[in-house]
Length: 419
Image (cartoon, rainbow, N blue to C red; front, side, top):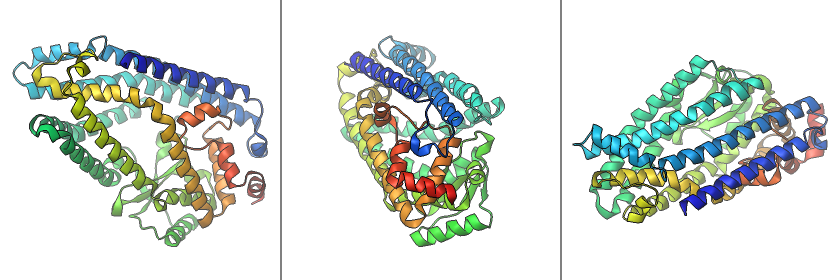
């Protein structure tokens, strides 16, 4: 079952990627009519080449990831790792379990690093987006590893202890601990974790800040601050986002976004982001994540008692490592079986984007949102002609033509050109 599901998922990914490449290449020489007056042919071709390059890399990643997964499971990699740890720490089953899970995560992260390097210093560099130096890349990787160890090691120890000592309902206690951990990270991220990687400065006084504060007042939105982040240290891409939870919420603008968009356009983009909060999209996604994790942990609780679960995935752990082996096997195998659900999650996300756009048009000018989106599509080299099937399967945001069309494509684009 696992081998079949893995083969089916990889075949589907390759089919979708091939469709995307062919469709984008076939439309690279003609800008869609509704965008023709705003995006020139050279920019359109650059976006097509950028999309194709990223998709080609995703093909290699998919095949490599499947081989790594097979190496861990059916080809005996996890079993060999358990044997090595038995030699290194023969007297402590708990220590072996901790080391086993940590080693799998560490190996996976190291195997992903070359792809991150190629993406950053080949593709992003080729298309003019990379601002990161190799030194900064390594520093970020080391910081991320340190954060993962500081936050993840205590959580892993707690999870393994609960699996071993809290009886048949251990999965419920693990879920409660995991949910509390995620809430804590959401609260701490803006002030503790994010500043380790970027510099945040208060949004300066001026037209933009006045517009933003007026928008927040109209929407009844309270925030701990408005900040500009030095995103240009790493990338030329522009963005804006909310971070934090409850009273710790912050609004963050990339400095690249502030430098490219006019104040009314940034206001419209922020109105869209506010729409996600007002429509409770963030809370719904968190609730969905918690519900899915509860169901997943219940399933893991059942699977961990089935001998075929371990044997079918190439592992015969000792009694002391059963919990760790069950946890690792579940984390490795579950995404393969959940892959067919990807279009459902993407469709829900696109629905939320449409709702946030509609909210934005009630609190800012639709023309400004259209103008901002067109600039972002152009500046970020986002393809205007994605393959419909690939887009439906993966894209968390609606295709440009659909999104602009919902906002009133022709008249609004014409108005934004003269505004």
